[in-house]
Image (cartoon, rainbow, N blue to C red; front, side):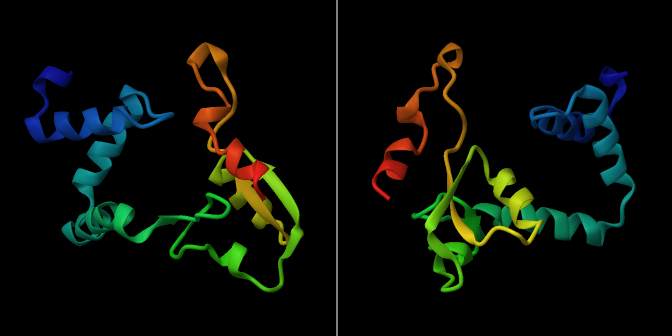
Length: 132
């Protein structure tokens, strides 16, 4: 099937296929879906992707993602700075924040120690956590 696809679709499928959790079939579905959407949606989608690295910042304190550095959580006077929730990923912060129950701050490690993948404490933000 892929050899009969136009070059533009093949290219887009190839990019989607590189994303985590997206296999070849899902990549093809996403590319075909985008082809069928209005150009205005594609323009907005393209702009959002293009602005991602320019507009989203990594917080220098907790390593969460936000529009500002430090992030809104670290900057908030209402947060208990003596309570730090250490999480693996930014997605974990989003999950905890969605409950509206936690009032402390966070520290995002950026992964987990995995010797088989050659990920040790030095590849994570463990040292920065130790200095808090």
